[in-house]
Image (cartoon, rainbow, N blue to C red; front, side, top):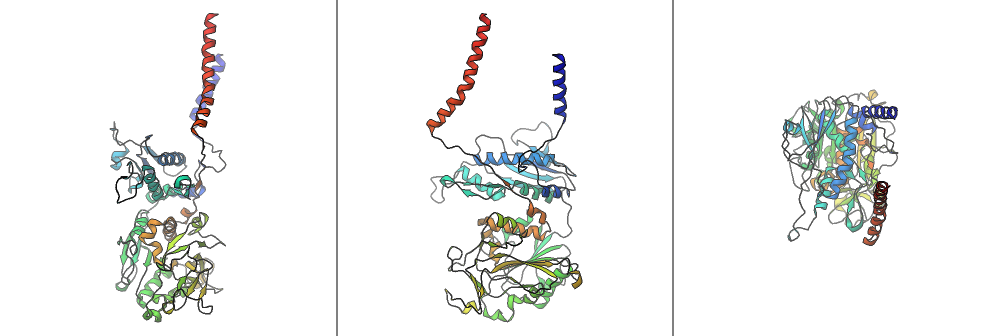
Length: 519
């Protein structure tokens, strides 16, 4: 007996000293993806993940589900083999600390937060939940919303879940957990080596949308916020008064210009692309001023042609009412490049996102065989649509001109970048990347707030500009949910059935104990 006890004690001691886990689930749901592990190897300092959400039973059900999914992921981050540790801290801000702790270090005083911080780069808020009981049901100025509904909105806005689908009673339930991608984004922003070129400049002087403007339809303040959340600085620049692009310029965004670019400004764009490895995003709306017809594409056509792209001064029309609103110009884009999925649209295509737009113009790829650029058309209109030539002179609804109009599906987002094999022969060893979008409203405040597909596209564009394409390949985790539907009588029957077994065991044990005492 003593030998058996010693053997059991030694075995338990050895097992307690082994700090390792083996993930035996088919989809490795408790293990970080290979893409994440590769990105974590770029860390140059430790990162703290701080959770001040209390373990409170009164929290909405979606918060409990979220914390369950998140805790499994946090454990995987803590155990990851990284150059610097990822430390997880679960803190209660209402309990007085016995000694100086992580809350004092980062000056955290609020509950219901999830944050990421590093000693050198400060702290970032990943998720914020306002613990309220819902809106006032007696307030006629707003529709009533429960605490559960408000919690779901907070989680949706934080980007932790995707593939939301409506179930019974109109409740939306997520289908995929994107927590790994969300946490990775903040970890890398804090722990990756700082880049010398980390400013995205928005052009001004041509009626462009401004990154400071909060206007729903004309402003780009939400896009600015998405960039700043990723540790990218945002500024404006007037190409007409500078001689060269600043050295800290990572990318240049031309957002919905309404005036022609002069030759000097086009040359600055050309040099930034060809010689400085610059990234340029052009968002060009259909132009209805006939006076601009002598300078197609607002004077940018020569530059676009050099990079193998064409942006016609045409307007896309779609007779399908579920895609296109003739009066408002609202348009839903649902067609993506299928042959070879590009990182910018891969997750959009896989998850069936729609892109909300307004009036669009086509952005085509030149069909030349020999070109030093790799060009791709990524997002299209429907097959029934077409692009109208001379659209300012057409009557609506228009009749299709088979000779002059462009048949659908019409591309509205195309990219061009140097071909690694042919670019050196053309002297493009330091060339950057060009993306052209045929509707600036896709990235407007209103569309980014209301469209999950627009938000996903904006994030992917930022990753593409920041040469962080690996972030686009982190796979989401498919959620497995189970539900049991039964009546009250059926529930009571199941309860008594399962409760009867331990009750019988208890009664039997008491009876045997009494019987032994009698004997």
